[in-house]
Each structure stands twice: as C-alpha cells, then as structure tokens.
Length: 198
Image 1 (tube, rainbow, N blue to C red):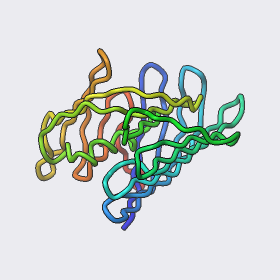
Image 2 (image 1 turned 90 degrees about the horizontal axis):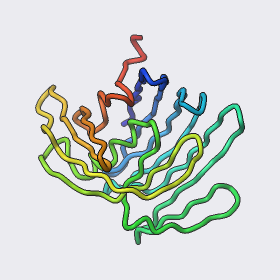
Image 3 (image 1 turned 45 degrees about the vertical axis):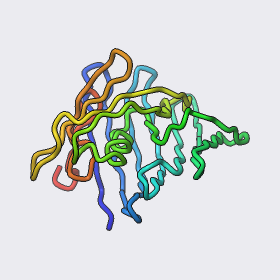
Image 4 (image 1 turned 60 degrees about the horizontal axis):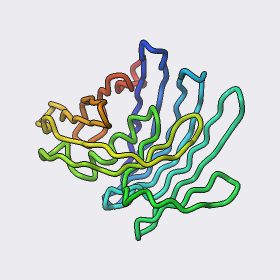
C-alpha cells in the first residue's frame, strides 16, 4: 500500500514552501520518495530524497540531492545493522559514530519528524525519550549529532490526532500527528494539505 502526503509551510520569517512524499509500507518499515521546495534565509532551495526505514523503525538509508542558485550537492547516508553510519557526498565515503543514533532529521521536512514518533509509538502510548539524533542541514548538507527529547503530550484517539512535544536544548515545540505518526500540523515548519482538492 502507498500514500501521498503533502505539507505546506508558511513561516512569517520567510520559510514558504511545499513538500510531497510517496510513502510505501514495507514489513513494518517504509520507503519514501519526496521533494521539497522552500525559501530559507540563504535563498530558495529544492531538494529531493529517497529514504528507507527498516522494520524496527530505525533509518536504514537516505539519499538526498539539493539545488540552489549557487549549485547542486548530494549526500547518501546509510546505517548498518551494527548501528554504524556511512556518509558519502560523491567524493568518497566516511564513517560517523553518532553516539548510537537511530533517527535522522532532514531540515525543514515534517516527514523525518515522524521517524522517532513511529519507532517508539509515541502517537499511541504515553512516553518520553531522550534521543541521540543525526541532523542534516539544508542547503549545506552538513551532518551533525544532537540530542532531542520527544514526549507524548496526548496520544491519538479516534479522529483526534496525537500531540507530541519535542525539545532541543532550550527550544521546545509541540506538533500533532496522525494515526500513522506522521505530522499533521508542525507550527513553524509545515501543515498537512490535500493537494488533490487544492
């Protein structure tokens, strides 16, 4: 089974954009092919990605291409069964430890916000976890390790979406997630839209 999800951003600080992804379920995990276009403080960017999430909910592979007026870049990140990470920007692979991280956050993308939520079932059962994360900046494709706290504010019930809190350092935010754990409304990032009906 496959679904198309789309989000529109309208950040007053200048982060207008759109992201759409085709998500295909596979053995407890999923594959997604997506594209985004977004204005940022550095200018307009377009990015396309392919992501594979394993059956245990951990990221397995991400390939992302990004273009700006200044040029194009690409990056592939793979996570092996032992938890090691391999990064390849086209000039050769390098290994990164990333302190046991299992989740990755691609800048501006609500789809990647779903990874720890789905893996830990935070949209279904109340819990709180402090997680090591790998972050990928856009448009630079800089990769860094960070730590974030994810917690269930309110589990989803029927048609009511779950409310999830996330904290990184002194920054805190809440977003709503659907029954599959994908963000519906992520203030300052994006809101789900139905492009089929406008």
